[in-house]
Amino acid sequence: MPIYTCTTAQGALTADAKRALATEITRIHAEINHVPPAYVHVVFSEPPQDSVYVPGEPGAPLLIGGWVRRRHPQEEAARLALELSAAAARVTGIPEQRILVVIQDGPARSAVEGGHVLPEPGQEKEWLSRHGA
Image: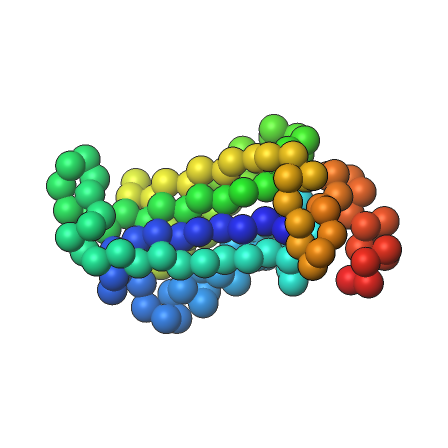
């Protein structure tokens, strides 16, 4: 259901760090938003080092953008962003001061997974039972 894109300069993260970060993002999202881990997607984007700038200078921040379904309680969205930031620092070794996490939300009806429009938050169990997950 959710998709997270992690962007940093090429070579900033090892394969092990990417695997660990994807595992933590999946675990945290599944726990907070009550979805099966199999529905959490994590993608890494690694532009060349001369294509990532902070503030106007070449850098290697870690930018984590996530899309989630609208209507999750705001406290959960804030907790999600905070936990993702702390986990990213812990597993990658990148200082939290160089990590930006942005969670964007949209209506569930705006997304389709497995050929089915996503359920509203709180309707996951019914949706999963109807769609064989």
